[in-house]
Amino acid sequence: MTQQPRSSTSTSTSTSTSTSTSGPTSVKGTGAPAATSSSAPPYPPLAEPRPMAEHRVWPRTFHDRLTAPLPGLKAVARFAREGAVRPGPEGLADIPRLPYAPGPLPRVDARTVAVTWAGHASWVVRIGGLTVLTDPVWSRRILGTPARVTPVGVPWSALPGVDAVVISHNHYDHLDAPTLRRLPRDTPVFAPAGLGRWFHRRRFTRVTELDWWEAAELDGVRFDFVPAHHWSKRTLTDTCRTLWGGWVLTDADGRRVYFAGDTGYGHWFARIGRRHPGIDLALLPIGAYDPRWWLRDVHCDPEEAVRAAQDVGARRMAPMHWGTFVLSAEPVMEPLTRVRAAWQRAGLPREHLWDLPVGASRLLE
Image (cartoon, rainbow, N blue to C red):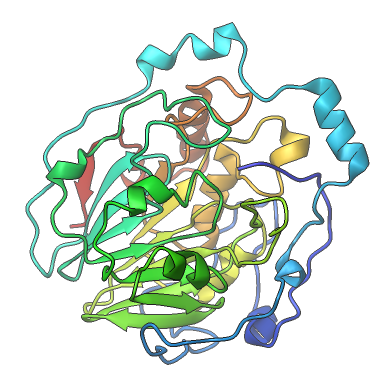
């Protein structure tokens, strides 16, 4: 949600991620897709699912997982001096043009995979007979940010029973307490390492915390937690005390949906593709990227998002993290314009870019 100056530093020293350096990676800037297919075996092999809601003890900090240093005093001073955190009047003029087309949720069965964009990083994912919410934010306003510029695409009252929630990290635009309070406290929650305490304090009883490359299973659907180029912070004293990442959801037929959460571009995408070959759909962030020097380590721009989709070997991409909250300085319609142009330049089939309006749905065929 906020951000970091550019750095070439890359660290990941924990035991659970030590195998992630194995195998080839994509070359940054080439846009070359990773060599993955649905028939390729995962490399390294996927971990066995862990027990649901098990009690675990985590490190005090996850600073070793950062792929760029947090901003220093010089960067903060430059950001304060330049002060470009919102678009100017011309950049905001297109707010009425932001795509918003809510419709009824599609009918599904246990063999159907469908996604509906509620806005920002919030999706209603129907997979393996489950209804899964990603980073659910149904609030009109989040801390430190102007009110949303498009309404929520799915009324809360229109949701079917929620079978699970996945959380990418603890920034306020991804972990929204007022929204989560609407859920029954026995709703299964899949969360990054260290974030279970936050949910337990709010009396959630089925919280499964995972480290990178770990997984759990619910009713035949596998939930794998994968790395992201980001960070975590919710208060003045908890920087990087909890982990951050994305999720790969796999049904019993092997269909995969990758929810990237919040991330910059980097080496993790190719490695995710090697471990999870044949991703059918990648939900990737394309907004909140300007000023670039401040945000590039933690937020993909549209061109990087297209490259990331290629790196993970995804057959389709659905853009997110734009057109809902004004978090940075780019014009509000620019992410959509740029991602469409980047997709075309990459020579990818137009029908595989699911650039949905807020509230719209699409089914995997």
